[in-house]
Length: 144
Ligand SMILES: [Zn+2]
Image (cartoon, rainbow, N blue to C red; front, side, top):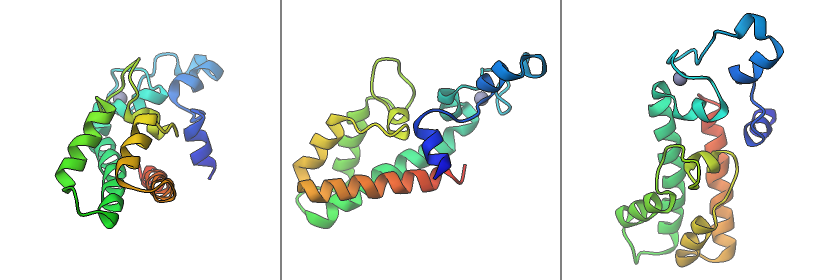
């Protein structure tokens, strides 16, 4: 629970924050995985050494929603829903002005995502689906 809160509020003790407190010790340290970038909240998710884990989080979140939709309708195929979901976020990676999956990790629910769910589910159903997808996302995040 504490991890979830810290994740949502970007309070994880990433190296760049630790440097503020212990500058003398960490002043020359970068991301311990790639050793090329500063370890910020965003970099944790876009570090090239985390690509597989990030993609797994993304796909698990997407698939939870897709399978939830498919439980209540047979009018669309999983691949079509997958393509639509990918288009909603424009990019899986960090982008300064677009909503991305990193924003979802932080806990934001883009209106485009809600509108997409509303095409296929009732209000109660899409709220429950989002709760289920976020629970799975945070559960999976703990395994990183
Ligand atoms: Zn890195």
